[in-house]
Image 1 (cartoon, rainbow, N blue to C red):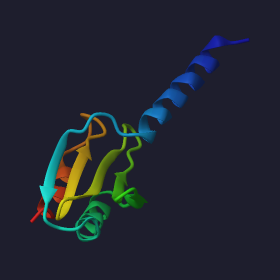
Image 2 (tube, rainbow, N blue to C red):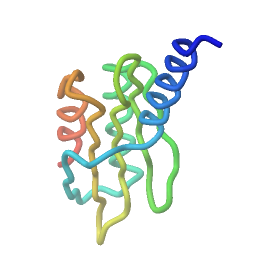
Image 3 (spheres, one colour):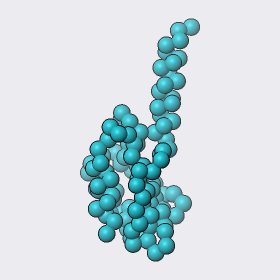
Length: 109
């Protein structure tokens, strides 16, 4: 049985598993906005930059994901914190630009 196709298949599975969950956060900021208000500001900006960006509900907030075809996804988790929210950004790869992070930063105020 050829070993190369099996090896390539295993690499693909490992790569997809890496996209499923964020790694270490690359930034975290507080905002006075509620998770609803902050996510409502960020999502259209992300969709303008990455049309396949999505938002899903998580415990106490939202997870926004901008998928990447060549690297791990960029992820922004927004959760309730005190009177506002904490936004935590996970950069998918060094290959991606900082445009998504800048868009998220614009919505902090």
